[in-house]
Image: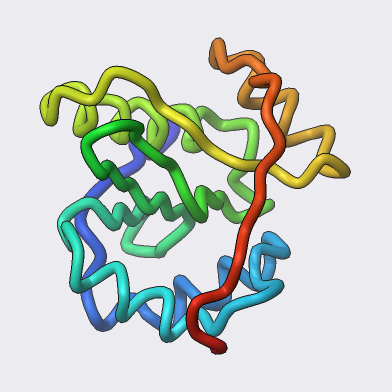
Length: 141
């Protein structure tokens, strides 16, 4: 019988496993992951989700909401555990949290070159919005 993913808030002891997971999933591009974690722990830290399987961190999802749109950031599932419903479970928990907060719409960003992940989100009912995502660093990492 397959083990069930246990989704819980991030704990400080998770840092090495979380950073290793993000590295494995090629999510570390522009910012310092330790700083990303520290910043999230200052704002709704209970919305920094970790997925555990048999005591091992195999997934993450940072959930955010500023009163206008909800966001999913740094959703990751270890490659050995992909296609097992774990990403879907993390998204469902993020949606549950956002609905409870009164959030009307969920947004996320995926690199345009990441067709597999775009396909994953489309299968979950997400659509590509006709927008251009712009960004600007306010602090260097």
